[in-house]
Length: 393
Image (tube, rainbow, N blue to C red; front, side, top):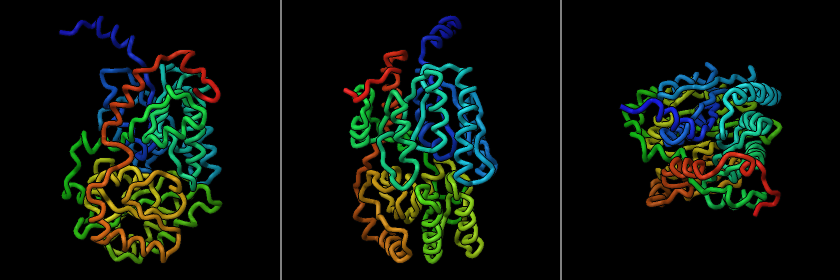
């Protein structure tokens, strides 16, 4: 029987890492990392934002169902979907994350990607002098405010866990010291190696629609760099409705304009029998859906980062993902109806699918979580980690 005193002593010397998740969008990325941390460091999971909202499927229940203890809940989303609401949400988030982190005082705060709300825990940690480790910095998405958020998080962070060498080079070019930058791959890909992806019948039960013939999966988010954040969405939804294949719509992110995108998807689903909208589809069923799809269409980063691992054709529309590293499965189309229809036709062709056989995903091979945890283990908390040299070295 283990000695309780030795177990307590071991827990005391482990690094204590606070991990933030604010929506289903990042949970599938963060969860493999939390899994890899078990037995190697203490973790405190901070859950906030869309996870706590019934309108986004109350996905905190999925976090609990996966067996994770929640250290703090931070509600901050505004009631509306305006840009002002986004700004107010950041403000509320700063207060909530400051209170939680002040109580926990972890050795390190782990953040991921580029959602606007991630600015809140980063600001709180900066004020409390808690070092930040950031996953997926160095990426490019010029058509969304995500670009500015990601770059801001990079400059606020002390350990950089980047998905590709190109991303790492960009982080160093921003003046970050070489020893702080670790090329790890994207942790969302680890699910394909670690988990049993649901079979077709299970996915059909989850989405409420047969997967024969294979559907087009639609994931479209507001274009937050445009004054009208859904101008591209209106063109896209008008074009996608003319597609005769079955359609499975995924809920958009909680960015300004999301309610109009939901309304457009609901309208199409009301007008035709072979279209469904899923408020929340967990990451494993989402992988299962992609495996049974004819293509993915929209402007989601999942088309860029994840779909390449299963050689799924992707029609990437508009400017949201402009500049991001791409694999051969991506067909870029401007937000113009004729171009969108032509791109979907090409993506659904047998010839295009055949050309993708044997392709390699530039975002990694499913071992990212291991590399991320090893990188975190390699750093020593304290002033040497907190104090950053300008210009790098």
